Length: 134
Image (cartoon, rainbow, N blue to C red; front, side, top):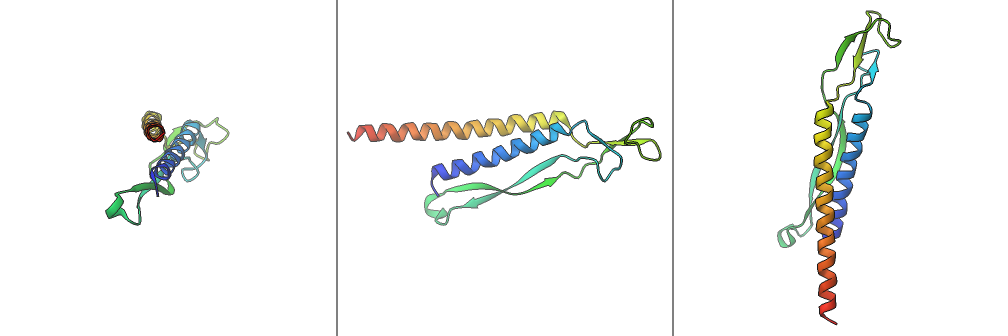
């Protein structure tokens, strides 16, 4: 495990996080004919992975172990004329908070950008070090 491997895993994890946010936002205003079928927001589950020689190197990275649906209650709306209305005239709206998703998107995007900036800085420093030896 080196700095570039760690950065690649971190960026990959944040990209997956951004993809779940995009899916959540795309389904934010969907409706369903039953509470069980209604869309619920998804979140990735992160896990820290330490290097084999962690005590010597101090290196750790992150992996996505799962993507789970949030256990949120869906809202029910009385729309008897809607084609997906149940026998009582209700449709069930997706359990997605768009404000929360936008915050999640901004945070994941910033973490991705910070990691990219760190990799760029490391690469520039390595190039300068190589030029010093010439």
